[in-house]
Amino acid sequence: MVNLAKVSSLAQWPGIRGEMESTVLSVLGPVPKERVELQTKTVDEMQFAGYVRRRVNYFVDEWDRVSAWLFVPDRKDEMPGILCCHRAVTQGKDEPAGLEGDTAMFMAQRYAELGYVTIAPDCITAGDRISPGLAAYDTKSFYKDNPKASAMGRMLSDHIYALDVLCEVKRVDSARLGVIGHGLGAQNAIFLAAFDERVQTCVASCGFTRFATDKDPERWMRDAGFVYFPLLREAFKTKKYPFDWEHILALCAPSPTLVVAAANDPEYGNSKACEKAVELAANIYRLLGPADALAVLVHDDSRPIPPEVYEAADEWFERWL
Image (cartoon, rainbow, N blue to C red):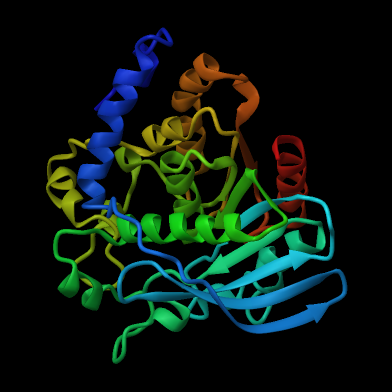
């Protein structure tokens, strides 16, 4: 595992980054290099005060069309775009789009109202992509068809296509793209920022705890349900991890990244681990650009994204996009 604290010069970083990318990709499994044509289609459109909401679908491989909600504010100037990654809820994209679920999670609608073009797609196993006969977030069918892949790798590939869709929108400034998510959405946001240089800023809420101190490490590669990284099973048995979350954060550099953690997080329960990951990755940010482009916010609210977190996220996007 790369010791980030020992990276002391810019000259070292390209080689170390390449090594880290290769290591992470070896766990993610094959991510298709050849891109398919999106063939984006609008299947529904509705006008609201200040923006239009479209339901679009597009190809992410030769056979699979993804459905997403796309929000475009009523403005004539170029606007930044934000990809809003849903958390692990059955309805998938419908929650960030404001159709159903927790109103605190209506982030795609919220940022459209603030003047950003936003998109909220379904992940595999959620929303319109739940496999017939299986529960939401059951990856059994996915691994049957893709035995050498990983669910996280496929979600990364799919979200790269979602950025492609955002860039197709005429009034989107493709040099000003951000990503936000909570829980599963935060994991997707961080991986996207790490592997797609178009992401200029990232906000990730309650998405991880470090492998090294995780009290439930099996969460990342269970035998059933949502299986993130099958190729990490052996590493967790020996506790010799090829990478940890600070390495993913380091791969996000120099893109400004705000990590949010809850002191009473019912899922991960260890905000200290998030702070440690940020502390370790901060060395790379100091080398590559403004040191304050990586930050951590810890709150003790029981709500998934309380008002104070949205205030910080709003300021983060306004500052960096």
